[in-house]
Length: 74
Image (cartoon, rainbow, N blue to C red; front, side):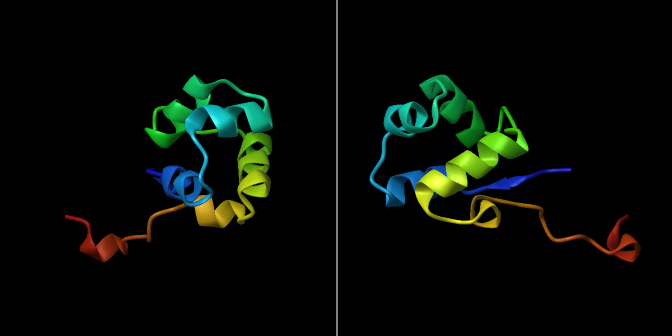
């Protein structure tokens, strides 16, 4: 299942670079980059740290795509 990720938009809205956000929450810039590029799905703890630092909810950053009813799957 795909995870919808709005981290980059929230980071930019907060006026932060990847490096600034990474330093603020104690990870590398590469970690932020891989999350934003959907290469890495963060742990719950890291997701909560991101949300807290950006002043948004975890659901504002990450969401599941709408479910497709089975009858619509071919």
